[in-house]
Length: 116
Length: 110
Image (cartoon, rainbow over all chains, first blue to last red; front, side):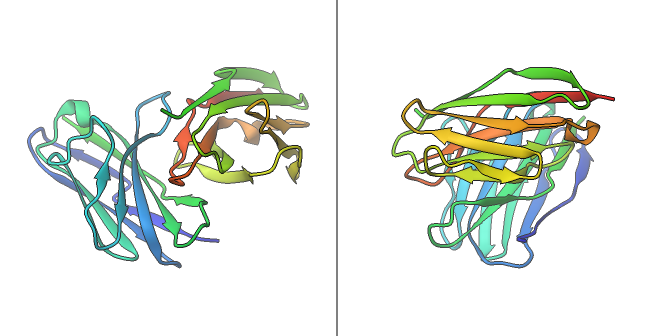
């Protein structure tokens, strides 16, 4: 099956610092990658959709200058949380979708971000 | 705005019980309904349903879609403690970007 990895799996940082999270599709080319945030006991909330080689499309209420997304290749997307604050602490999950009309998404294992 | 509602939000059963999880949806240009199982980490894919009335089955899990009434159910028979997880339902429309429900938290006691 298709495998998506995320790195790091867990990160603790100080308030005001920036954190980069990587999402890689290991055995397929992902034309589209999605970034989700999940708070405890809540569902997955889509933050942005990123297509390789173009700017990400952000969902309403998500600050694009705070959550920088780069999808530089067909196997790698990065999410950078800039000037992180404690309220940004959450579980961040990426998913990747192969090209074409196959709309099954493959999820990464997630990154637990804690901002002190 | 697309909407997916799951019920119940939580469920506690004993091993061997059968459970039914519900998912209703309002999705523009509906294409498919997806079920995922989420344990401690990211969701793992269970089923994708696109046609009404056709049951999909995988071991003790099965699911069916009703496109007229806009809902789907996920059945788990002879539950085991390893079935304890959050089960997420998502509706996918014309953009192929799923809208997730809040999930049903299932706890199976030995």
